Amino acid sequence: MIKAIDRYLLRQIVPTISVILFIAIVILCMERLMRLLDIAVGNGVSTLVVFQMLFYLFPYYISLALPVALFLGVLLAFRKLSAQSELDAIHSCGIGLGRLIRSALVLGVIMMGFNLVLTGYVQPYTRYLFRVVMFNITSGVIEQGIGEGIFMNLPNGYTLRVERSRNAGRELYGVFAHRQEEDGHIVTLTAKRGELLTRALDGTVSLRLYEGSRSEWDPVTKAVATLQFDVFDWPMNLADLVRFRGRGGDKSELTLAELMRGYRINLLAGRSGNIGEANATPDRPPEEVMAPSAVASEFHGRIVFALSMLFLPILAAPLGIMTTRASRSFGMIFGLLVVVSYHKVLEFTGAYASATGAPAGLMLWTDFAIFVACTLYLFHRTETQAGTPPVLLMEARWISFIDRIISVFRPKRTADAR
Image 1 (cartoon, rainbow, N blue to C red):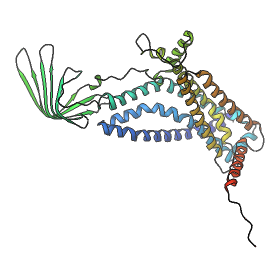
Image 2 (cartoon, rainbow, N blue to C red):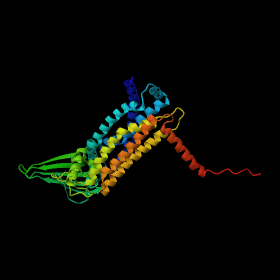
Image 3 (cartoon, helix red, strand yellow):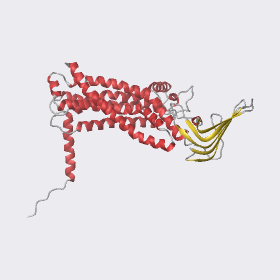
Image 4 (cartoon, rainbow, N blue to C red):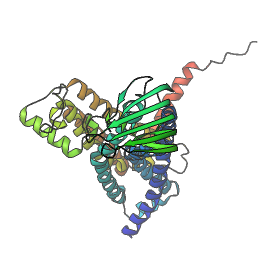
């Protein structure tokens, strides 16, 4: 019977988590998609690159939505059980809240491990790849453009010159390109018009030429071969002109193993503070030269964030319990406020410790301990206290408090005139 109840509870929780997770990711992606499309349209970038950037953001969005989905899934499941008096029937069989929550805790452990892998090892790489593409679009490639009347040396050995350029150097007129190889072989490209395009998923920039010719001169045979074309796509590799930094320039781009290694090295060397060293080299990886406070705050922050998911079902279950006469959603609103506020407190604590050099481990684990203590206290009171659930008592006190505030501003009735 107990296993049947566990399966029944999971059937109530998992579909809700899936729906909430899907809705949250769609909303987050739509909000970011609008901004990415504005950047893409303004820089002449293909929509394929936009969807590639959204793909790189998926791990970040999943890590944000997963705790909220788990919390709401458990809360709504217990809310349904209590609203339909199924929770009373389960309690009458001698199954307490502590035993009933075990299946949700197992689900929380699984999701905690998944989120730890996601934030610790997948997200650092996808975050870096997103920044590489964004750099190639906004500064490293397109904004550079090609100026008028200047000779531009390209990484592929060509020298390029245009008579006129428009649209920040992306629309070109009177294009001339020339390359002489070491063996004397000469290649020349001319075209009436051209435009810079970023279409490939790797951010490679090509120059599309219109109404031109390509000539090759062989120093051995002295022969010239000329090819006329109407449209010609010429890969230029402009990204090589300005390269984006290597991964690890930001603490969020380091994996959990790299953060652990850097944190351990800083502890053994006695390094602390918010001042880093010189740029990373092959002999000195980023986690060794980054500010010790930044490494410590990111390392402790990821672990605390992942472990907090284990206690979300313990928080959600008491907040979901209600009576049949209760019609308000105080538990859900209060719980979401607590979860979001706790997440923001962790973010602020990590940022403050990273910027000031304060002990990140002590501060973040203190926040975690307070959250765990309050959660376990609420769960214990709900499990052991008979009568009205604590969350409904909190709701009644909150309503009474609001009514007293409103009564202060409510106009007083005056006695009727005689």
